Length: 336
Image 1: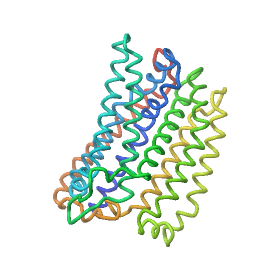
Image 2 (image 1 turned 30 degrees about the horizontal axis):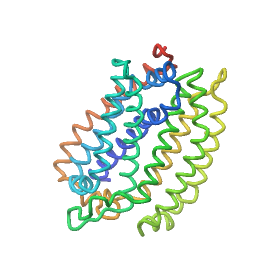
Image 3 (image 1 turned 135 degrees about the horizontal axis):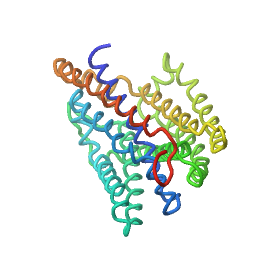
């Protein structure tokens, strides 16, 4: 354990927090056409209105932390992934503008709803493609990116993009099962049903593809000690998926645990992230650059760690407080 590992853990935590917290509201955007125009869409929007913009704090922390703590990785990854990262940022901008303007410009609400859905889908696909491009490998010569403009585009990166879209959509539907009632909750249940097996199939496809992208992935998964995780991992994911399928059908009833599908989806995401960590650790550019090779000078890491030690607890505190304040169900008028 050293400063570099601590910073890798901070950035990994920020990225995981972003995936979890912004994932469900991006998922709601992806599913938006599945809800009726008017009250249902308004209720879906109201369920994320108090928290959606704060969720993106973690994206800023993850990206800024990568630049500050691992500048070499930032210098390699950014030019390699300009295209999907630009699409992601444009998608997030479209989504944010549409979120605000659909209330203030009701005459064009249909257009803003379409922009909200398109922006959410574009941002999600771009994030998944970015992950796939990193996993499949980036061409590096010396200390710089040496590949072409389209190197990020491949069947595997498209597979990870679609898989993440399915995962976010499931996360969003389970959030609505938890936070809404009536017709919106029923529609969320209807949407979550096919998304559950679809996500399991997507995880299986990505997991089967990944070990053959790089020799080190295969070694880490099928030699000791990684094999002790690779054997039970599919069973754990399948078990969580089965429990999720059952729990979706039991929501919306008196005394039902409407929060359980969301929790089980988070568990599936957590297991997937653990598998990802096993595949790439200790690299920050998989198969090319380790965290120690990319790290900033020790004095810089110490200086930034002081700021992170103050700011991260503050961010966690106000995030927990916001979710606690808005912990109830929501209707067309808002939370109650």
